[in-house]
Image 1 (cartoon, rainbow, N blue to C red):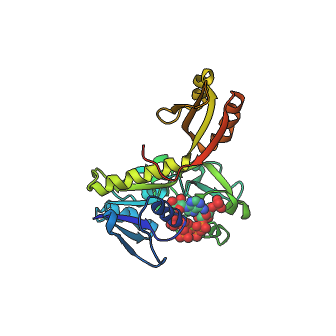
Image 2 (cartoon, rainbow, N blue to C red):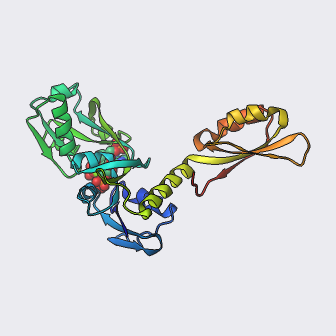
Image 3 (cartoon, protein in one colour):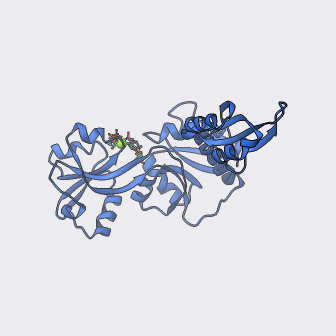
Length: 283
Ligand SMILES: Nc1ncnc2c1ncn2[C@@H]1O[C@H](COP(=O)(O)OP(=O)(O)OP(=O)(O)O)[C@@H](O)[C@H]1O
Ligand SMILES: O=P(O)(O)OC[C@H]1O[C@H](OP(=O)(O)OP(=O)(O)O)[C@H](O)[C@@H]1O
Ligand SMILES: [Mg+2]
């Protein structure tokens, strides 16, 4: 059986489970369930702390896992990213009270509080900066400044509202950008047929979320122009309409551009333009 690590809590947990359900896998009946066996798909899911997932996968005890890119780098585990999943997007920054530092080089000799000590230590070493200390905290890192534990923090930023609420400013450029990813042990090949199927299913979910299906009718002489607006992933489907001189076109288009493309098709003479949501996909 393929053994997969899934986050049991935090920002990664719910979207990861939603994606697996969309991919047709059995999910937890209770939030406290630690293991779910999906016999039909040859998969066993282990619900683990997001931080521990890279450690389990890096050790080879589990075949694949879903975690954050920042957590993978922070762990230093011998696991590698094989697929980005597009949720739990964030950036990772240094921050402090206004004026405390302008760039990473000003952090020399300062105390830096973070939940990502491995990631911060590596980044500072790469930049040739030696802090006085990296203070490891489990969370609520922003509060550490007010309590005098550190001069600067390094933390996850999504909307920036936590920093803004405390009057803190970002220092320098982002240390990294992160999102949920699939990982496997460094150098491992897909061990099981079930692993290939798992990756294909997730890829299918990503495409189904990103695209919609567009149908429209257009006069034959405008087909070439219309197709340049809706080229599809490979090639659009073209069928003759019963009404003479007209063609029906079906194509996949990026969901976030669908309305603009409809405007352009309408101007190009297309009629009966329909959008249908895609519930599943294999390319
Ligand atoms: N506000 C956020 N928006 C988007 N992604 C986030 C946010 N906070 C954390 N993450 C991402 O979630 C992952 C951290 O997961 P983890 O579950 O350890 O922390 P968490 O989501 O902050 O949960 P908690 O702090 O409640 O334990 C990282 O990849 C991080 O980039
Ligand atoms: O830029 P924002 O949208 O404000 O999001 C970023 C905040 O979200 C996370 O905190 P979380 O709520 O997980 O608490 P934690 O600090 O205890 O991890 C992160 O650690 C930041 O504090
Ligand atoms: Mg958090």
